[in-house]
Length: 418
Image (cartoon, rainbow, N blue to C red; front, side, top):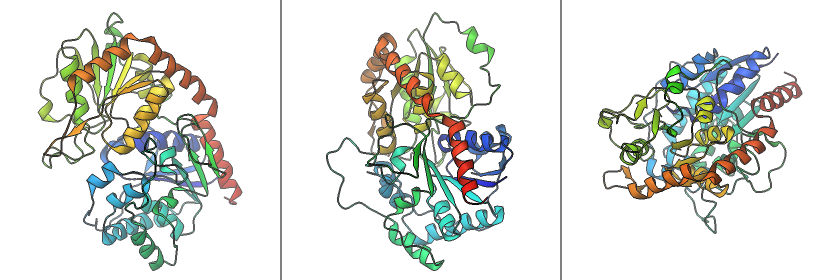
């Protein structure tokens, strides 16, 4: 049996854990020794719910974050995203030291990562086998987030100079791009060529279809059924409404715009709205919800998506794949270029409508309420979006999902002599 450490970019939302936890659970069920590192509060709840071993933050000083969040939010591709997220060599070095400590202490046979630059860099420094599990736009073979633009900009911001500086300090590297670290010795894409087209991906890259966490015995609460089916049921998934908390103020990635839009458009409509935020606290600024809204911290995603007539969300990849796996259409308000990329793919497949937000002077986001309301009604009334979503669902399930991902990782570990 092998020893696997699952790592991911440490952010307090459920996007990356939703894809990693079910694969980690499948490998643990096969008898392997599995740990999962994402000590942020919401991810840790998911890790604990799955009965997995959560690896804690090491006893090291946390470096002072130095980020250009606005750049990360509008990034053309992964290279620019990392340039915004790690815009200072000392910050990147400190986070890499933490990654090195976590990996050394756990002593895995294989590191399995999703979108953590420092964990991938640490695995390369330590010369450990690396599996990456990502959406297509995170892989270096992707054309980038802004696939709809005619040309990729020739000069994009990059943190590769800092990456190579730190790699050289440990006798590793160099790397041509930061994004190259997203390509593992085995790269698994949790989508399909239809949902995640890439430019000539070659082995060891494999599509495995969606990986979405839900306990095998998960059930929706009885009050969902008690809502009846006379009115459409809308699942409003907000993700993290305020990444910096209410005391910090707006950040470009905040999803509170999704909640505000839905309340404004749907408070007097003959629909039932169930609001969840993935174990996030609901901001006080939301106030009292309308009578046709109900808010709970978390619901099993696949079951809730299947029960819903429509999903409204921020365009996160896991939200997109949860809806597609259930064959449920969406109206999406994307809050970053990466999320806009996901949303546009959904719209291209005919399974969603997109409403683009605009930034306000204070850094918040807003939308046109009339456009949003019209698109919600359009998707609810027209059968074409649901038909398109169901067509995609039938296609993506042929790729094997969690079972196929676990099989490939297990075979990869065996090929490394582990």
